[in-house]
Amino acid sequence: MIYCDYNATAPLRPEALEAMLAALDIGANPSSVHSAGRAARKCVETARAQLAQKIGARGEDIVFTSGGTEANALALIGATRLIDNPVILSSDIEHPAVKAAIEQSGAKRRYLRIDSNGRLDISDLAAQLAEIEDETPLLSIMLANNETGVIQPVAEAAALLREKNGLVHCDAVQALGKINVNAGLLGVDYLSFSAHKFGGPQGAGALWFRVGAPLKPQQLGGGQERSLRSGTENISGIAGFGAALAAVSPDEAEHVAKVRDLFESLVSERLPVKIFGKTALRLPGTSNLALEGFRGETQVMAMDLAGIAVSSGSACSSGKVKRSDVLMAMGVSEDMAECAIRVSFGWASTLEDAERAAKALITAASRAVPGLLKENA
Ligand code: PLP
Image: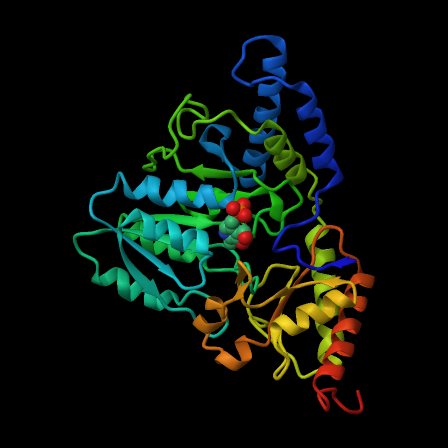
């Protein structure tokens, strides 16, 4: 099986597995004062320092969570509970975890426009902020989109929010470990992360928040994580989070981009593909493309039979395929959106993977849609 679905979950890095096994072996509670407890505490604090170092922040401002979903909910609900008269601004390209947390917060909301490249329309944000008078604006904007990989103008948007004394939450789940993420340079108040997107384990995430940013704890109990997120820490998950992040090498992104670019160029040579967000800045490993007349689910099944794991461009949950909100927000037609797939590469991908994935797609498409292959190519 050639795995090309890193944006869903990246395979576990060996460094993460090693750290996790060591943490599991300790078998003690990080709140215990005995030496085994202190060893467990060390796992958590090492990972906190590894994340802090990567994002140019202080460890004290990081809260470990059960994943990206919980980090998003903690930030959005935890902030709105303490803000006077909040209004949340966000767009249709946000992850369902963000959309659901906004809904649950009960705050008023405003919808922001997305351009045809899949980027937030900054002029729309500026115009909507100008209309806000008595409310406190809270922007929720992802750093990189999970379906298209398109990188959002977060720092630019955050500067506009600052002028209005507003707050910014950034879902950086798809960005961490793939592109540079620096809390200070982004100028945001909250950043959400998840370990399984860059080679750590599933079920481990984190929220960074700026000193002084409002944050009401949502899970109460034993007072762990400075009472911001109670519950005995998932020490193996946290250790795997830190070790996976520390294992990201500086030249990895360049290699992954080469793999993705090779895949796209091979496919484009033979097939009339539409690549979404192609001219925008994207994550190095993500490719979202459509082939008119060849439905996304059918492409995913055909690729699976050929031993290539990719995912459909449309979100598929509990067996139901739903048209992609992300592509619809970009103005893609319904027909085209239904013919999209996401191919995502990452830390263990090779140029050979790109060649084999491209070949499988070309073969599947030429069988499914006669006449689709470009001639003389
Ligand atoms: N945010 C984005 C952009 C994601 O891609 C995901 C995962 O699919 C999440 C949040 C949720 O993260 P987790 O699976 O760790 O809850």
